[in-house]
Length: 92
Image (cartoon, helix red, strand yellow):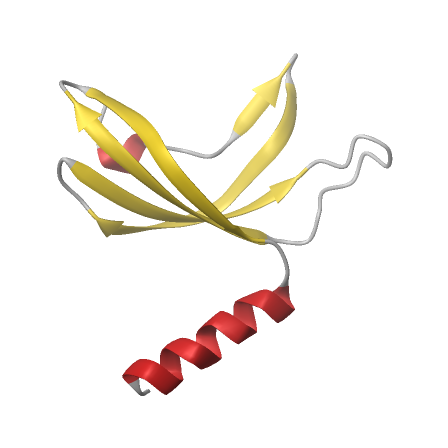
């Protein structure tokens, strides 16, 4: 498996529970970092959630990637706060 093949998409009994919308490979190598844009299925309503972001860190051992950590950005307000702080710290 390659880093480009890693996905957050998850299906259970033929039903997509987590739908990957996009991804960005932030770093590659023995330690790989990927940012995913995704939606989760609300099992009560059957509808997909608003888009969320997950930043995941994987460690490669042999040909296998194992997730080591993750950070989820669950709403647009939180995403905008992160963007503003990065701009403040690093400039536009």
